[in-house]
Image (cartoon, rainbow, N blue to C red):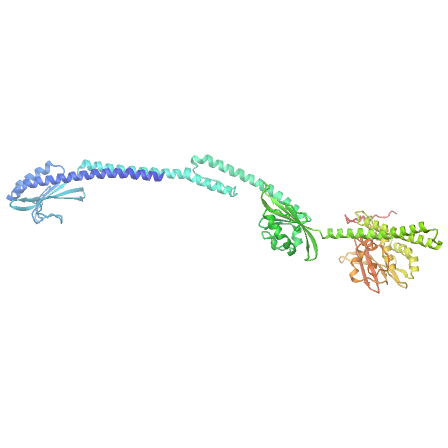
Length: 636
């Protein structure tokens, strides 16, 4: 608008000034022509009079011309030297006084008095522009001077030109004043609101829903601005509501991720870590590290990095993983790896990589890495396999012996002597007892490892030890082993399960007798001990020891002896046993929330010892899944 207005106004003003200038030039030409003609006419009439020196007639003629011609401003006569000899509307005679004043005319430098042609020029005075005409006064007798006539411009033309120019300037100024005023109004009512709306839309697009547009003059866009502010307000409320919901959902998700037992990592397509739960941080030693936003490959253990670098980049790129050598369970969306870690200790982890897609299920947005520590699972699977293998072997041997001797008796019974038949039957009976013991041990161990709840009561420990010694008294006598006890007088009852503790002592004493040579000793020792909690409180316990002078246990076997089917005779190959006795002992000790310890020296002997809590008049229940003790007070 401003450009168009400028072009139109300049064009119109140019045309107007061109027309005014043309008119002024035409009027000036007319003034020049009139002045030249008038000068020649006057010069022709006054030349004879000036030549004769009749200045009176010259004055009369000049005055008549001056009065009858309104456009003549002055008529001046000057001699050859430029001295004014007469002039109207003033005359030298009129200015004579006591002082003699000589007036001269300042002729143009390029004016030549002897020329035949007149000379015309314009000059500006305080009363406006005047056309000067210089005409030489000549006659046959010679050159008598110069006639100078001043011609005023045509007042009508001057007035019209000035008026036109003034009107044009006023119109030009008015147009621009209106344009400027319109531009200001447009800026306040249209342009500025549009710019503010544009800024507000960009701000809303950037997520700043607090943006508002406040203008003193809304103009034609006021309704649109009000609608924009209302929209921004609704978006802000909607955002706040969404933020609250997202925050709540995020808190739930983070709580859920933080509490799961497996390590969970969320990685973007640039392999930068976005989220790591507590389990993963603890598993990889990231508790004190700031790892969020870093490349996950820079922080994972080297064993994992070496195997997952290529699959991670391929999954992030959206490629399908179908190389069977790279994982156990591979598909286009997930891959599973089993990796052995050596630091800080050896363990086995299962890593599951899962692709995260966008809503269209076309583009990969990230990767979820789930890390499971399956060391215990692998150990249990190996133990289960070993257990089945050992049980199968242990069952097969007595069954084979029983079957062999029975078949022999069945086929050759009449040919055998009474002594041989008796020996075969005793052997079969012995193998049957061995098979029964194995089955009972397996059942006992299975029962102890279950979630069965055992009720703990007051147990008279001397009575329990006495019953154990009676059980093995004849066996010890046959093997020529001294079996005795050393129990503190007035020993207080302990908290425990009578049958379980009886089985525990039976297994430990039986092992001691089995691994002690004739002439050795087996001793059960019991004393009450107290453990201080603080200056005012103490915990009462009873310590029980089963010591022997047997073959002892190597240092490398001391931890393995409590495993299923581990037997010292696996190394010495001299004694029989199922290898479940000490596993049962360990489980019974765990049920009583205590520990079993041993001190042993090869060739000297072994001492097993443990502590039991003194019985208290409170109710407790103990179980493997819920380790709470319940003590039932005996009824009097």
